Length: 104
Image (cartoon, rainbow, N blue to C red):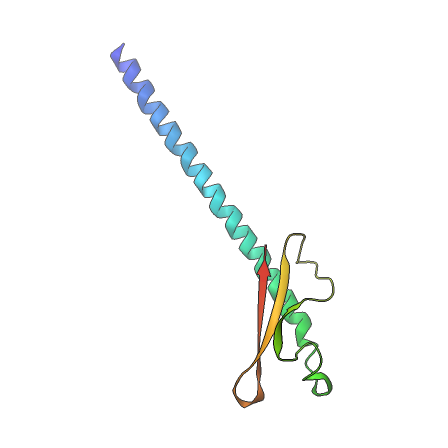
């Protein structure tokens, strides 16, 4: 009878450990999935902004220094709940740095 009781305690302890591990793994998977979706959204926004680089609108258009600016247009990878913004900063030699931030 003692052997059965010890075996039951060992089984319950092992099962609880397995369930805790699975639950903890699910949290990491959800965070990783959200970051991957945000990365795809940010890349799509940057791809769209690359079309805005032009001499005629360098200081007045979408690439004007400042921000954060709301992203105009529709991007399939920016699903509901993901909000992209971007800012433009001047860097040496007249180049500009674009920083995209995706909040969720």
